[in-house]
Image 1 (cartoon, rainbow, N blue to C red):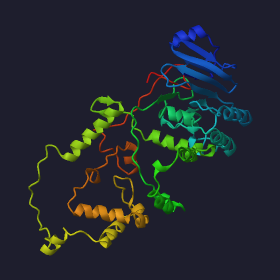
Image 2 (cartoon, helix red, strand yellow):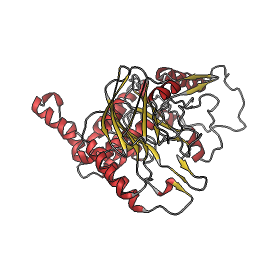
Image 3 (cartoon, rainbow, N blue to C red):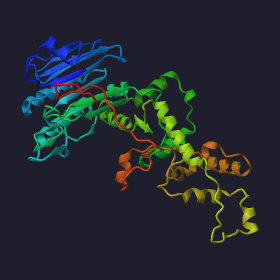
Image 4 (cartoon, helix red, strand yellow):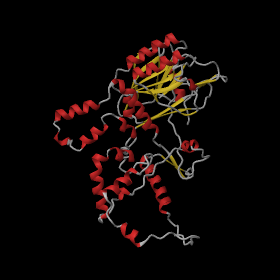
Length: 425
């Protein structure tokens, strides 16, 4: 699909569909919003408004029907209030919904560079609308601004989506493409569903320790057996965890964070890898070779100093089963800021819940010292790919792994504003 805003010419259906290579085209009543569609994409206009075009999109390439709202907002605050009200009305739907275009207003002062300081009132109206609708900003890649008059730069164009959209397409990327004939940057949207998405590893959050019922909850878990709960109780428990309306924004933010943390493409030599399984295998292979030191020979260098030798008595004590006091002292000596183990639980968790879990810890340690082999998962190493900008924030001038694997960007031909010509990126 291709969306053009404020084309400044009358719509000639036959001419423009042939010129751009699309099957069909639709426009709103005031001819400010044009919507082009390829063959096999069915578009049904739901609401035609002077500031937006709300459509239902159906296609065999989509997992389900989606709703799209293309925005071309008015320049003044009062007319925009009507736009915000209409978007709130449209939010009462359970289908995937994406909203994009030229909103003519920024969300935050840092989205403006040059010119006078933006008034807070219009920004507050925009933020209130997003809170009321539960829409979340999709973010962007490349240039931070979407409009300029060569003296002022602002992010006026953006893409928002609903939580239903995030559940249907767990990868949504928006790129600000280079300007051509327009003073607006085209927006290129890519949405997809990650294949075979593995669940994220559990990580205990230390802030949970401050909840007033935390210790009581941990204490009750040991005596709580889910198989003893009847069907009605299970349904009540499930309903209790369903997100309420007022929590939609929070849940959307969590989904957005997960989407942004996904690495979509890497470079292995001159080859671009995009399939999730191949990305995983490539990363695993690289670090396996790195950590195993294939081809490296053991060093035979003589050290210029003597290692201290322990006495025979101390050596024999290393085989003794530690006492409960020694085990507790060791656990409580672990730094509270140390990285959690493979089970996801941090040292503050073990220290805070010691009265409940001490017996299990004692038994596990004594079992090991009695000769039981340590499970492989206890000594496993977790490898995480870190995006390149992390190294810059750490003061490093380059990514030490850049030559091995480098995240890249690629986008489909979907523009929501700006140029009258579809992107070729």
